[in-house]
Length: 281
Image 1: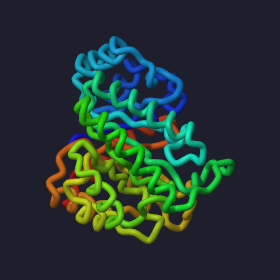
Image 2: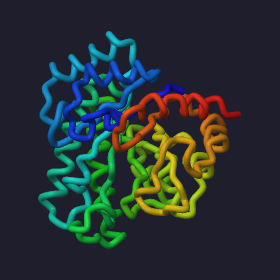
Image 3: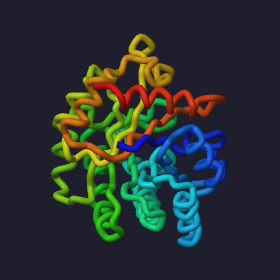
């Protein structure tokens, strides 16, 4: 398994202003083996970024001796695939089709995709979408994007996130299986369901080979809000059991820490914590 960090964890990463060269330099300096770049509506990497720009970013990674295997997208929060407005849904699909192409140009193997939302906890202006309607709209988006993913040779990795969807590993597995498309998988975030009376190692065992990539976060159950996300090893994640479950299903790809917001010393602290997590048996 490769120790990776999110671009969003870099100073300026959330705003998309940290240069790719600086991001790779900081990640390598902190002891990471891979960096997950992020595509957004604005910033250093967008759905409109040129092929040459993407190839330059790929060259930077290669020159640093760092892996660039995954691309994250936060586009769904601003342009939601389950939005009540059909034009917004269509725009979201088109933007993510372009993001998949940029992922391919970067040489990435997977694009993280948030499939929409019933409720967005940090966005009170987002009007709740009825669950069955949200699932159907998410299905339409994944179906369309899955075809593009197949064409460009990138896995569309659907994430479990605080969006009101897929809080059962059985439902999530059935959703992914329904596409019968090897280019559609899961971006499993090990910390995202801990606050919802779920046990991450069980999800890993049940989702199995559907898991394309993994995010690492920790969470303090006593808090129970978005503020409960905390430094790795400072929360209630069952890390030994989680690592054992990942080894059990034969997972051997990137483990990407998604730590936000950026702060002085965060990269070094996260890298050291991941070394301890990797060593658990």
